[in-house]
Each structure stands twice: as structure tokens, then as C-alpha cells.
Amino acid sequence: MEQRYIINNCKSFKVKDVFDCGQCFRWNEQDDESYTGIFGNNVLNVKQEQDVDGYKIIISGICDGNIEDITRYYFDLDRNYEEIKEKLSNIDEYLAESIKYGEGIRILNQDLWEMIISFIVSANNNIPRIKGIIDRMSQKYGDKIEFRGKAYYTFPTIEALSTASIEDLRTLGLGFRDKYIYETTKKIKNGDVNLEEMKNESDTTKIRNQLLTLSGVGPKVADCILLFSTLKRFDVFPIDVWVRRVMNDLYIHNPDEGKVNKKEIEQLARAKFGKLEGIAQQYLFYWKRENT
Image 1 (cartoon, rainbow, N blue to C red):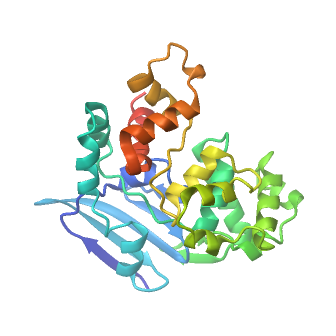
Image 2: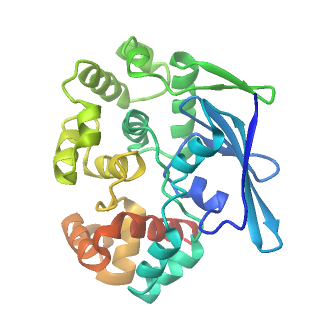
């Protein structure tokens, strides 16, 4: 049965900013500018509407539990992003401008297993292709949920994906990543890397080192997993081509962008943005990518 939850006069939540800032791959824009997506055993439609005092967010869909509880957790609604934005905006004018552009970003609480596989798929890939691969993987190994006359598929469990051979995975269009997905799934299934222990670990560096033992997980992918999953570590700074560009353009000013060292960017980010560097990265990344 469909449930509904409305957030009135909502601050720091704009659907385009949340779903298009590069943190998720299973949300798609609809004809009415709302977004429909699937996470866990939930299929939701999220619509933003203008209100007298600002705007409201209307969330409706099929939920595995109470829609308010599920959405409050998934969309990180109990965190004060207004306070975070104020702190970061005081750092410098560049960050203030990027925050103004992406003021509605919230970092989602996404399933750790799903983020590991999704960001391995994302390596050297573009968003439409990533989405296509994940959709095909879910159709083949996930469970079907019908919502408003359309079929959606849950992300495969560790057990379900562990039944796939490298050849099976290759048919999904994974390219060189098929071996990575196969090996990482086996490693997690066999308990060589324990996701529950990872969730209970307080030291970000220790978790990062564990993630780096997984096939297909390099420093950038590890940092994305740390930031965008339920691990929720804001003390990381994923560096891709856009982040390297924006950090060089604004702060480093090396005439040869390709020579900008990742270590230099990480040290600068830590010194400048402190323990909120992960959120600062999202504002800067989104602003640069959308305005280039």
C-alpha cells in the first residue's frame, strides 16, 4: 500500500541537488520534475512544490516500514545542514558561492554493500552507463517491486550476487569491472571483509584501509563509499577530475592541472575545511561540474 509523507517549509532539501550531485545512481527524474528511486525494499517518488513560506517536499511510495522513519533516516533529515552551510560559508567566498548553488544537497544514508558495488562500477565510467549496469544487475539478481504500474528491482543481496560467475557479470556490460565485482563479492561473502565490523569501527583510516583491500576499490572509490554510505564519514575528500580542477582553479593555481598532486589536495582540504571536508567536496564538485 502506498504511503505519503510531507515535509513543510523544508530547508536544505532540493530534489535536483540531492539526486544529481553524483552521490546516487538509482534515482531518475520524471516528466513532472519529481524523482523516483529505489533503495532497500522501498520505492519512492519525491516531489518538490512551491509553498507560501518556501517549498515543501512530498514523498510517496511503497515502504518496508513506516515512511516517515525510513525517509528521515535515508535523507538525513535530523542533521542540521543549515548550521553546516553557515560554518562552511564563513571559510571563504568560493565555498560560500558553491553552497549557494547547491544549497539543497543532503548526503544520503545509503546501504554500505550497495555503495561498494556501485562505486566499483562507477570507476572510469559515466552516469548513464553506471545507472544502466546497476539496473541490469538488479533486474537479474534483485527482487521485483511494482509501483504505479512500473516494475522496479531491489539491489542484489551479497548472497544473490555471489551466484554470478565472471561470464554472467560480463553480460551486464561491466567491461573490465566484471572481475572486480566477482572478487569483491566473494571476499565479502566469505567474511574476509566484515561489513558489520566496518560499521562499528570508529577510525576512518582503518575502514579506508579495509576498503582498499577489495578488488576495484582505489582511494577515490573508497572515499566515495565512506562519504555516501551509512558509514557517513565527512572526514574524507574524494578526488576526481572535477574536484582536482576546482581545487586547482580556486586555491592551488598550478598552470598544469595534471601535475596537481592528490596528496596536496587532501592536505589543503583537511586544513581548510576540517572535519566537514566531505560535505565541502560535494558543494564544490557539484558547482564546478554543473557550471563548466
